[in-house]
Image 1 (cartoon, rainbow, N blue to C red):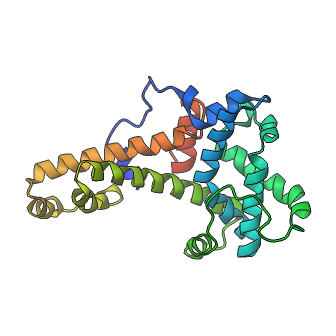
Image 2 (cartoon, rainbow, N blue to C red):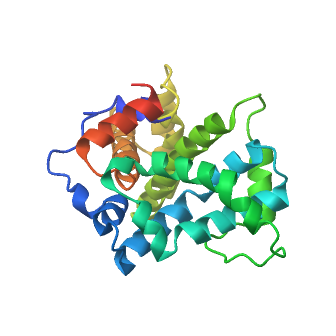
Length: 248
């Protein structure tokens, strides 16, 4: 879906983008001292990206209940102020840091934590048992590694958040119906007659539909980049993350 959208405009980030105010940059800047602002930023990132961790734990062979407890306990430990001492600029992108951290947790920390009574972990993210497991069961079939499962869910989470933001923007301007009819072109190229058909349905001419699709793709691309920006700390890391996630 993103590949089609990015073709609609310049794939490079705006030169004026300020990465000092991104969520991950705030965490990195806190360094060993930690700060309420950095902890809040880290918590926001964790609330956004809890599902890739759940999928990773499930792919490791743990059952739904244990995977929920592990995910909650992992984030509870990560978000304690003292955990920020392990965060430094050389840790790189948040995606890399998070995956390394959960691997360490599963290897060393869970054995001590699993003796806790179920429900005793501190709830950090809204992780609903049924919803999390239903999402996991809907994952594409295949014998993929936990790392691949994590990467896939990370990418899908990015795209879902960008699409949700785009939907809200169109709703605020009273164009929800237009969005629902045009969104198919974020992932599929227009075929002959598509724009004419939509023009009749939307009360527009085909040229106006083409322009609307172009703007939709362009805005979607920008929102995807904005989501990635929250998890990196520099324009260089932005381009690296785009190349890694989208194979560019």
